[in-house]
Length: 125
Image (cartoon, rainbow, N blue to C red; front, side, top):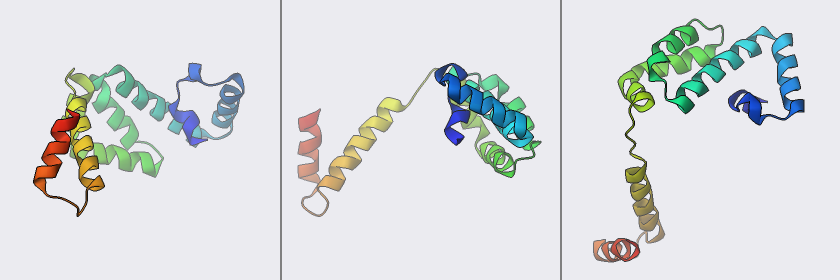
């Protein structure tokens, strides 16, 4: 059920859309969770960081404790989150290389030193 809240409505089947609509009609808490989740997902997908403050304010006033707690957590590193939602730069390539290096280290755990690790990294590059 929770996954229905994160998908775009056009990605859901007709049966799933009907189910979600009925859930929202029956329980106002689910409706509120759906509205806040859809709004946040739009912020992330469309990179509209200018609306982050509005979303945090709405989430902080929510009746759902988990969403309030999540919004509070976003406030701890708001500057970085806002930058991630607005700036065009990405550190995806760097993270990919770090992940690859850590994977190689785990595969060789306890078997060799830095020289072999260096050779394996340079060999795959």
